[in-house]
Length: 253
Image (cartoon, rainbow, N blue to C red):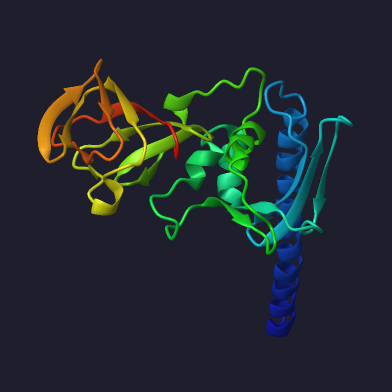
């Protein structure tokens, strides 16, 4: 086989592989979004009718959910009217689909400028309604009742610790996580206080709680209530991860 024929065949194979790979990813994305949309219509606790976008690795999709009609649609392209949309890496979307990571965990970040593999954005002209956070949980969590195997979920490093997010609604936030050996949660002074109370329940091993600059060892079976405005950090100088559940509540949470 001459060199130019060989090179030509290789080039043809590559040019065919690219659109085939893109089509396969489109099919995967459509199937994933369809599974979540169909399940959402069966949710007995959250039944908002909504249309939003999903931007997966630069490709737009529109999801429309209508409980009143018992119908949904998943179609390629951006929403026609201004609304909110999710950005997601295809790999992260697949993890959420398989139940390996919660969507809210994928969106977790300490500051708005931080990177997250999944996020919520607004189209130009759209406003943000806090109820979107609750809708996010119910859309991206399948099953009735919605059961969360939180110990099996992946966490991400946020605020200096390994954190996962369970549920948000106005006035309430919940999560779980680990302070790994050597980690320092809230080392950044901007993270050390909240405008609302925080309750931390330790469910495994121990850590050092630094509250208003005073260190105290806390661990499995203990809870610590941190009032609004109180400085708090957590450090782990030990050799085992400290496991915890996190609850934030009150105005502004």
